[in-house]
Image (cartoon, rainbow, N blue to C red; front, side, top):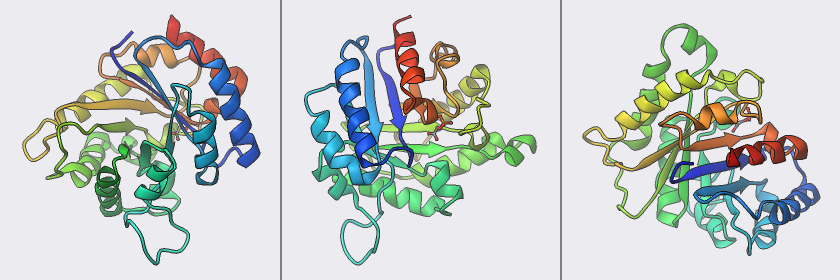
Length: 252
Ligand code: PGA
């Protein structure tokens, strides 16, 4: 088992309020004996964030927001800011998830502003990067990932005590049942880890997690890779049978 292993559950818009609360209650009861080093965090719908936080208060499971606004407060109809999610007990925020980038047209620039906002509010940003199928087939994977990383991190001032997580989530692997081949995910993770230690990017300690069709069947192969510090799970994290099967593999 690695020193730190992030186990992120992105509930997306799969569970309504009651379902989110019910699922959180079940997790608090049935995820008590995780191996040392595993850091479980759930990302519920924002409507349920506060209540899920209360349910999980005495558990080892953290909570995070699926999205935050780049501004802290003001006339931004429909948005929720980093300090606001922090005030209800969230400690993480997903930033630049591919569904935000591609469905809601979030830009690299907004991603960067959200990272700043998260850090200012004391949240740990989980910054998502990933290439589309066309980009991969065009041989542009590394170029796209590096451009997203450059926009996100160049000249970012991060106090040494603050943590940042990068999630490598190939767009074509998300919610498709076609996960990236673990050795290829490892290769891209190594590219990311190399980038974050280059000059102008002073993030020496960045954890990188893999996301995109993670299942009980493939999680062990991902976690066996040296540069993969955890997983970001969507669909399988809200299906009880798959989820508990997946969690049980962490003990292997
Ligand atoms: P998936 O989603 O596991 O359903 O592919 C992963 C994600 O979008 O974070």
